[in-house]
Image 1 (cartoon, protein in one colour):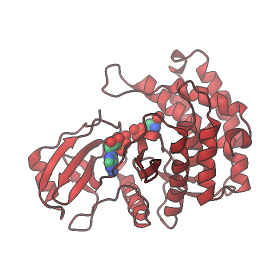
Image 2 (image 1 turned 45 degrees about the horizontal axis):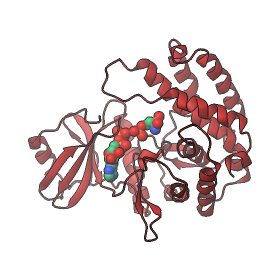
Image 3 (image 1 turned 180 degrees about the vertical axis):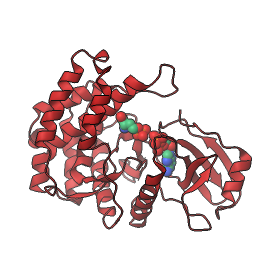
Image 4 (image 1 turned 60 degrees about the horizontal axis):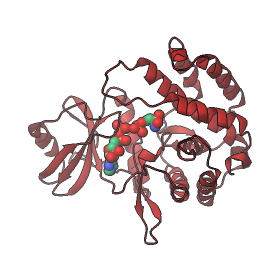
Length: 326
Ligand SMILES: Nc1ncnc2c1ncn2[C@@H]1O[C@H](COP(=O)(O)OP(=O)(O)O)[C@@H](O)[C@H]1O
Ligand SMILES: N[C@@H](CCOP(=O)(O)O)C(=O)O
C-alpha cells in the first residue's frame, strides 16, 4: 500500500492551477511502493506521477533528488523529469506534505528476472552514472558504511528472534567489511541510485523483441558514493535465483554491458567482492530493522532479512571478481 495521504479533488485542482498542464482528466492512487504516496495523474498535457513525500523522506533532501533527476533527464537518461510550475518551482506542498509532479515512464518492471534483462540493466546503470556527471550538489550516503553500526545496534535487542546467533554473525561480518572497505579516494565516486532493484527498472520489448530499459525510477535513496557500489547493489538484487543460487551468467551479462559503457578500473575490480558484501549487509540491516520495529498489523509488507543473509554468506566465500563474473 502506498497511499498514506488522501488528496481531495478540490485540493488537487487548486494545486494544478500552479502548473501549465491543462485540465485534470483522471487521478488514482498507486498501490505499489512503500515510502511515499504516489498517484497516477492524467491531464490535458499527458500522463504524470504525483508524489507526496511521507515521514521517512527529509524535506531538506528533496532539492537534491529532484535536481538530480532534472540533471540526468536533461542529459538524456530515461528517468522521471520533475515538472516545474508556472513559478519555476518543482517542489510544492499538497495536503500538508511536500509534493512534486514528475513525468510518467512507460514500461513494466520484471517480476521474474531473466538473463536477457541483465545486459540492458548494466548498460542503463553505466549510462546513469555518466548522466550524473557534472551535477554539483552532493548527498552523503546515510545507509553507507558509517550508518551500518548504528543500524545493527538498533537491531541488537530483537535480532536473534529472527534467527538464533544472527547478531553475533553480523558483528563479525560488519567488522570484516569495514576493515576491507576501500579507503577514501581509492575508487571513483559519483551520483549513485543505491536501490536499483527490479521494481525500479522498467522494460519494454525492443524491435528485436528483446527487453530494453524504458526507464529508471525511485531516486529517493540516491547519494554521492562509490560508483561500483551501485554495481554491487545490482549484483545482489538481480543475480540470485529464487533458491538463492548466484547466477553467474546474469552477473557476466550485467558486468560486461556496464564495462562497455564505463570501464571498471583495476581498483574497482579488486574491490567488487567487499562492495557486494557491504551491499548485502545494508539491505539485510534495513530489512532486519523494519522487521523488528514494524508494529504487528501495520499496512506495510515487510521484506525478508534472511534473503540477504544468504547473499552475504555467498559473497563472503566468493572472494574474487572472477567468481562474480568479472
Ligand atoms: N515516473 C513513473 N512512471 C511510471 N510509474 C511510476 C513512476 N514513478 C512511480 N511509479 C509507479 O509507482 C510505484 C511506486 O513508486 P516508487 O517510487 O517505487 O515508490 P516508493 O518510493 O514509495 O517505494 C512504482 O512501482 C510504479 O508503478
Ligand atoms: N529495495 C529495498 C527496499 C526499498 O523499497 P522501494 O520500494 O523504495 O524500492 C529492499 O528490497 O530491501
